[in-house]
Image (tube, rainbow, N blue to C red):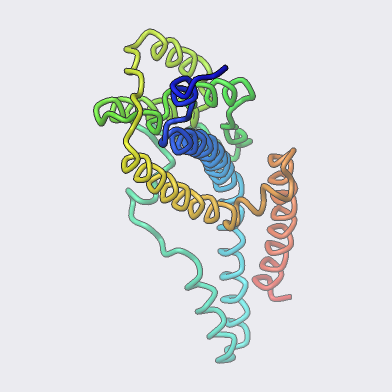
Length: 270
């Protein structure tokens, strides 16, 4: 027969359910942060590739449109054509200074290979693909779950984890599997954080409130990423985004050829 004393010892503590809710919220937030960071890296890498591959083509189209409008205005002298030519030229970025012109085209050792190829009419090397591999994704997720600052209660430990996670995020953004592996080994060999002691109810409620605010902030970040043009393009071809860029580039090359033919005809007086 169970004695009243035994029943009392088996009864859950008042804070036990609250502690379970906090732990569940912490893990849910960590998983959500990992998902948002993974998506952010994917969007940024695709945006960089998009700008490298399609940016010069869009710029060339804008320049051709401006020159076509100017050629038409020169032939007709019509005020409306002149206005259209001015608007088209205004859409083209003004000529930059020398330093701005060379920005992104050269480093401390001279012209980048892509820039040199363009100036010498050689084939331009395709932009470097920067997308973390499946192994890098796996390493990142495992490491982020272990070191996440939300698992710390002490401020010093939280700061240590935040600084370490910055290094983890940087390695993941580069898709550096070797660096991620080394970071995992470094963390495993580092100091073990002290075991978390049961918190008073007030601290647990504060913790839940902070987690909810953090989740709300991340939701806004994720929504902004999802509503961007780059994310929309990724949704069109989630399995082959590079192929989508190639398809768009092909259409832009066709448009450029048509514009060049049109411009040549206007300049020849046809």
